[in-house]
Image (cartoon, rainbow, N blue to C red; front, side):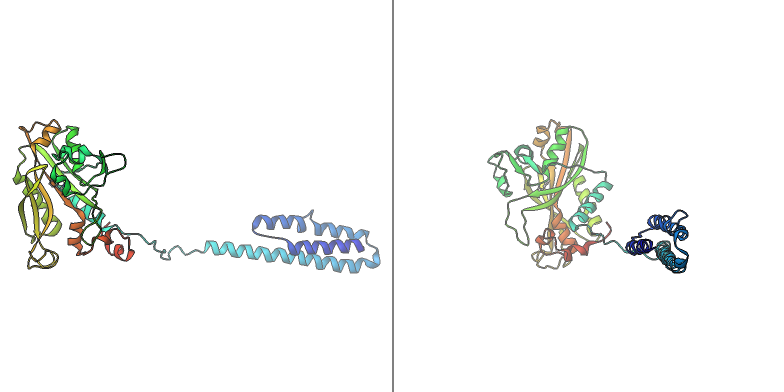
Length: 342
Ligand code: PHE
């Protein structure tokens, strides 16, 4: 009997160390210890080999062990059903945890707005490379080598040689669209441009433009003006005044710059408009016939207009931002303020 009692002590130890982590291990435990062919049953079977005078004591030890094994089983079972119940009692009507969403960058918001205004006029979107060759950024736009107007734009050249540069304006897309030779053309070209300028509140080495190009038969300067009037009204409202000033671009003739009445002082004069009441927002003009000919378009049959504007400038006016550097510093306190309609 001594050895069976030792055996029971070992089983007790085993049960104390037994790990139950779910229904499967609990069932394995039940089969091993409490099943019809289990250990407890087996120990009761040993009863007949125990001498009569010891049967009472052995029976007590055995019953105590059986109760212990069963109580452990009940304990684990209760614990498992408690966790299961918890799982099924999730309250699906509780409000969810909001996922913090980012907001669109103000430059993207304004770019999308500009593009959508021109889309309504039938313009589609065209894009071109930021790494460009000399031809598409300059020469094809009537800016041959040594042309003084090249100095107006401080160009970043690439190590690959003088023919490769970062585009200084989105007018390269104008050239690429004309080269495709599919007429009429009515596109807006949004994109990033680069100029080697010292970074300050008013200048940056990269910024964004939207260029527009419309080429068809009988396109006139009046069409250009009406298109831009419409744009200004949609973008800034009906009360904003517009004026055109003669200007010079090698790729347009005649050329103009367009001003709008200052949104900050309503034309009375302030720092933003340098006390003139007017702010320049874009350059424009009739596409130079030479450009059409460069791309094999008959300049006697077709005419066109083009315009180009800086998105930063328009965003600054629209949201009254006074420092260009804010756009690229990624300060979330600044960026978070623009979670308007995405
Ligand atoms: N490309 C000119 C610039 O970057 C803007 C422009 C575009 C002017 C088209 C006229 C016509 O300043």
